[in-house]
Image (cartoon, rainbow, N blue to C red; front, side):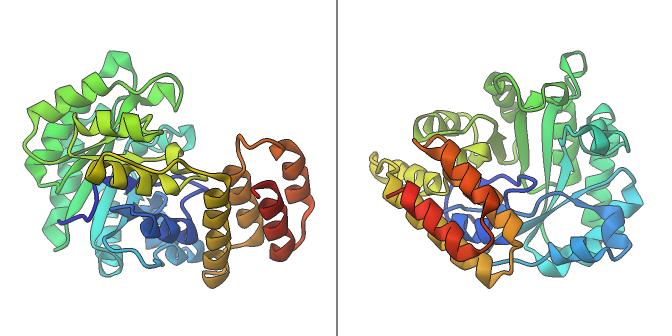
Length: 305
């Protein structure tokens, strides 16, 4: 596959809605992806899950699946194939409710099964398939390298590696030395993920992997993609100003209206956009009680002027 830029938007539950993804594309994200979607929910025609196939001005666009049974992955992949350019298999979610059913990071305990999932999906779809993994369930079970090799042998387009163990959640530091170790053992492209929060460490991490996936660093700050891309091209980038942050949020509201994003979700996004700004605590209280988009727009505009 061809990507216009090396910085991808990592899927984040409750954050990467269709409007925010489209906004990140406008700022230069090279790939966007849905939040992880349940194979079983897709097979049961769950209305809310099926609605998440929708995309904005996103191409290439990826749909991420999670599950525990190989046949579920196969059947769900056939259903989603017409809606995306890439199918991503989640083998790294650390959420207990996901791991409890044998999905997400639980799959890392069985590298052979991880490879089998990819192999069987590849057998029934024509579009590329990728995988998202972690280093393992915990430090005593470092299976990331073995899982990556199995996925490579099964035919993944690329593999995304979050440099933490499932037991860490999102705490501590991502281990980029381990990501580097896995990368050096593979011949397919590797996307590095974890702690990509600014331009400097993005550049540093791109020295280790082919691409980077930006998660929390992009939350409330889609401008980071423009910064990374500008720096990679010219060695320079513009600092994020309050005015630019406000401009990005106002554009998000326009896209949210276009895609009919629930107002409660728009308010939650506003909290991310104002994080760390002087006066944010008072603004949060106002945001919580506001009843319409026009008021929300004014509250954020007033804070970020």
